[in-house]
Length: 636
Image 1: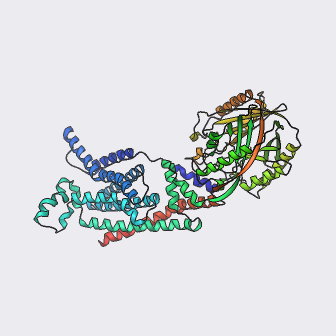
Image 2: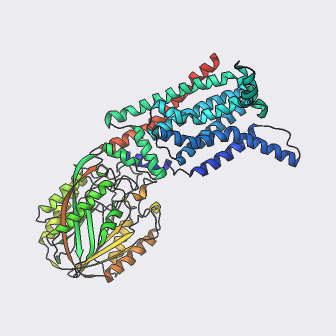
Image 3: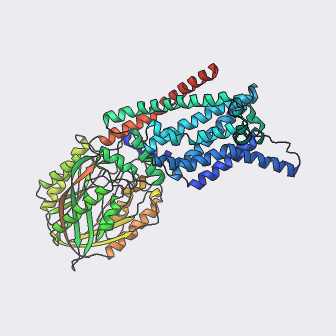
């Protein structure tokens, strides 16, 4: 991933899972009660029982005038929004209502402090309340338009519920109806007791006048226009360059991380481009014909995050394979992310077809190591096919571009090899902090180093002698979880033995590794008297570990000594499991929908621009709207 893409991925740290609706409402009622105690003064609190009575009354009034609109908005928003075609869930509606309540309490509290210090009086507090209610409407309108993709007029209906409910309660209990000359004796006798109840309300509400409600309507209109203008300005670059809306991205991103929905895949599908990717399978069979292990390498990237797209591809491969599955990282970057999880099925079908094409042989070469510039390559041939594992360790590296991998595999085949399974070991990087994230791009020195190393490895393997093959495997799911950098496949070890030489292939279900950890593991396996001559460590680059954190490499959150001990134990188990096997490799091509060339970078650039400039633009829009509101206040 590039630095721009890493900045985008890092935004996930600001997202959290929406709490259950009853949790949000419970907290909202607690805040409302506390605000009521602070805002209303029902009587002398002297005396324990009398004090508790008035304290309870103040809390109830806070719940009634502040909490009731929150509850109505929490339950009503979802129903109204879905009725007009939206997608708000009860959890999101409740959290949104709670956020609106917090805005009201904060603004009114600040206004009360200012009024006490300046002598502006109670009317100033209710002037601020008008601004708060209009702000809540604007905030809710922005969120509902982003989440439900409704038009301004349609989104205004569910967005106004909290503000309208609060305004209705204030209208009735402040006695504002007395400013109207309507009806006659019947109205006075039957409706006025229900539409004007100032005697049942705190005395502080008596200063509310009809002008407050007129100003509230005007302020809501101004704020709604400001929200619309803000969204139009932010959305224009996305539509021009990508043909999609930023609101679709925001809705999908929040929905995925907050509630685990698939809305983000719908957005990515709009961006997608068709691509043909090679899918290579290396299978090992026992003498009885059952599959012992399977190395699977489609040239896709297991991203973008979590289980979105191909993020959980390694796990899907493991569930599909008969033998123990080894899905290492291919030479492909984020442009080759699958847009939806459905595309994984296309790749899995291609894997099955490739497995059916395999012709097995009992002959293999010893493994070889070659170097060219910064690139190091471990290679081993099975019949006329070969596995090549590339690394730049101890130097830092991240994804290898698709074109570089194709060129390197083609270079190896020019030496006489048939199919080549080229692995990006993805085993040493300094995270997202360095100036160079190690992206291996076409035309770079590193790309030519890798291509040259593949050619050298191919030459040595073509000339090497063949002998009978034995293999052993072992794996452990481990107790580590994705938040600690280890995915559900845990740690898997395969050892091959040819003509007295033993090679260990260690696969960790994670996304890259901390600097130096790969070298520690290789040295521990090959320098001790453990029966291993050559070893290499790979990661799957699973993005299940990157749901919340963009940087979560193997070894950063877990004890490295414990990891090393686990790998050594599994290697010993694999050595004990060694038995004669046959091996074979085949390649098929799959037509899939991926992000596409430069789409990931463009998306990341636009998203980062929204974050960096959107805040300043939003502040400018807010200040402009408030300035107009203040002008209207003064004119009124």
